[in-house]
Image (cartoon, rainbow, N blue to C red; front, top):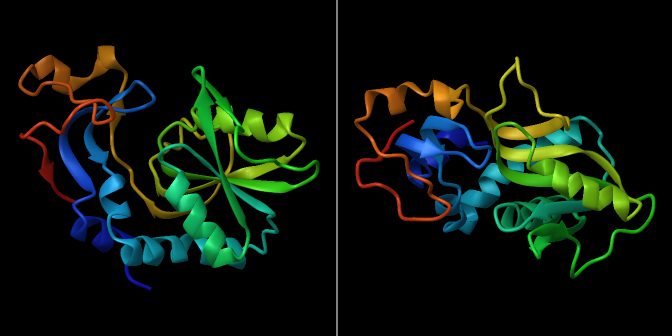
Length: 199
């Protein structure tokens, strides 16, 4: 299998600058996973590594659940490779919900994310799964950015790439202290031109 790091680099899915993560923390690096989704063949290669790790662990799963928007493509591709059903949760009135699909009582579910930094955002999807009577086995992701001293509250079963990149509380961010790079939130506006691809 090809190295996931190389594939992300080819897709320009890794950026460097000053970024606001979905967790609210700041980082000097950002994984722009939508760039990987432009290339279905490369996305399939990356997710093959995740699927293989699940197979190696003999994990039995019924449903792959991807939180919209970031997890939809990865849930679909993981489901395709494992031969399992793939669905997604989405926000309705700002509340994560299972609007279009059903999870049946007792079904074993895995959450598929793009990047996990703290794992906090996945708790909403875990709640949805359990309220429907499903069993949440854990998370899979393309990039695992969790720290040993701040593990995800939901077990990470498999990732294509583990990156040990620094991230900071806003009040402790050294990039903010330097005052040279504006804070960029890629989820709400275009990437700052100062951001550079690297890996």
